Amino acid sequence: MPENEIEVLAVRPPRLLDRLRQAIRARHLSERTEETYIYWTRKFILFHGRRHPDRMGPPEIKLFLTYLALNRKVGPSTQNQALGALLFLYRRVLGRDLDAPLDLIRAKRPHRLPVVLSPAEIAAILRRLDGPAYLAVSLMYASGLRLLECLRLRVQDLDFEGGAIVVRQGKGQKDRRTLLAKEMAPMLREHLERLQHQHTEDLSLGLGRVHLPEAVSRRYPNACIEWRWQWIFPGAHPHGPTGDPRGRRPLHKSGIQRAFNRALKQAGVVKDASCHSLRHSFATHLADNGCDIRTIQELLGHKDVGTTMIYTRRRSHGERIASPLDGISVPSLNFRLRPYLR
Image (tube, rainbow, N blue to C red; front, side):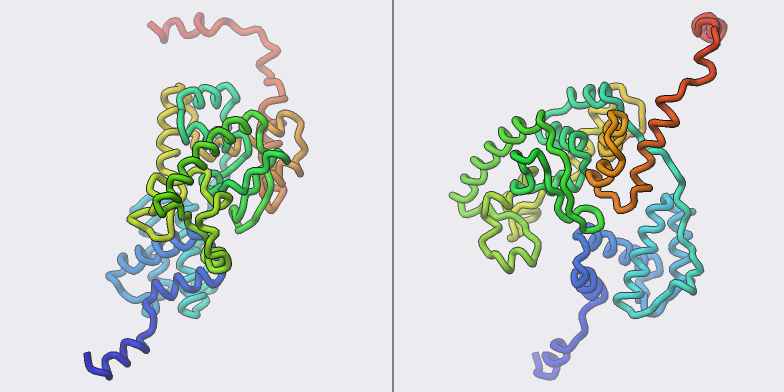
């Protein structure tokens, strides 16, 4: 290759998506945020025939968001997620502020009450689970964890003596402490004992590495093989996905979600519940048992206590007030439905 061509390659500016990754990592945003922003940037570019975003602006963004809402039928939260990704791209990478030209086109999110499972329903679901799914679902309900918070727990995050779990870099990049249920301790100790045997075998084969944040791996080069940094829910591949040299990644969320949905159907639960409903159930049942709202706020990691108040509103408005019909003598249901049931 001629020297002048080598010089041109050396000074060639990084590609747009690489610049976007650099801007995200410079602000220490989460890995999930990086994946989301890259995804929506790609979709935006492909939608407009691979045009460079620097040659587009508010009209193209509005057209893309309208397409998502009308053609793809995405919900308001997904539409706002795409908008957030594009605003970050234009502000932090391309140096353009589009707030005023976009004229506040954020979709209005509907106000919905959280889906809450009863203790009996949760017990029925747990009876139909086994393996990592059983342990993960139990932890999410027992400690109020989000799904990814649960799957990204490391050995050092469990405080058996203090009866607590340390959630690191949760939503909003915040750390917090939450409950470690007494009933969970024996199961977790047994699970960790099996994992430690597996980790020892991996080390003997020259494996046993675990994926770490870049800052940690630079500062502590040997931390990736230490027991305390290992995942509580490790993925199946000791090299990580597709031979990733950085080592094991945590178990993927889709496996737990599928197992939960399957158990939900087998248990005959008709509520539109998801793994996140376990977190809602944790907070609601604490409130029902008289736990104060500030404590629940801290355990959930909510920034605003108003977010936590929805659980107390559900209790006071739905469970503790008798319906006016309860004081009236009415005929039996079978009698009234007899013509309909024939």
